[in-house]
Length: 64
Image (cartoon, rainbow, N blue to C red; front, side, top):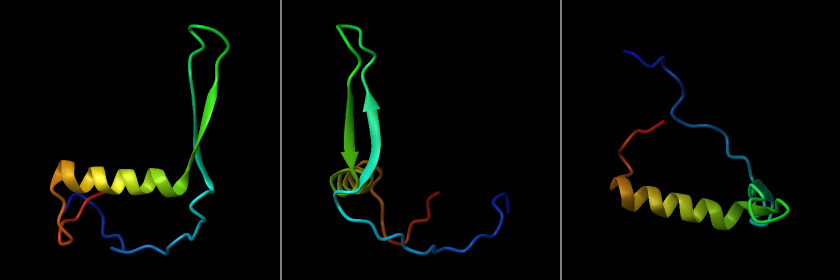
């Protein structure tokens, strides 16, 4: 009742595993700030696996 009714599925956005996902930067506390590029494939596998094991996710669960 609190959450409006939204579709339970969304269209897939196909990307290559090596497509850029996000950049992380250091603060530069020991020198010049540096950035690292994370790609889509490895990060998404890690996030999905961590979510599954940390929260004991089941295919019938609903999450936002």
